[in-house]
Length: 113
Image (tube, rainbow, N blue to C red; front, side):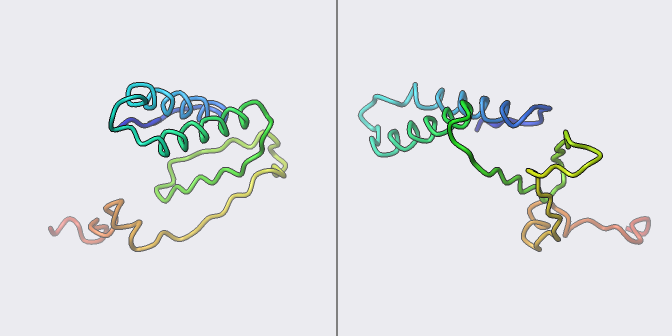
């Protein structure tokens, strides 16, 4: 599975990388007997939407749900708040803690293990 991975970039950079990776997935599988035309059409439509966003012709809301806290967004309006940026801190769910391996961490009396 391909992923964008760790990267210092802009929102435009994320969209450009994602669009390129999605387009590369369509190409090798786009014409065989097992091709599901509906899936291919949906993927092409999504890539078209991403192109419109990159061209500034369509506006979207981007939600970065990062329960591990690995994302950083730079406020270009600092020290003033960015009027187009909403930061919401939340408590992780037990399921998210489980996925991150946090429930299994021993943080107290670990010397006695």
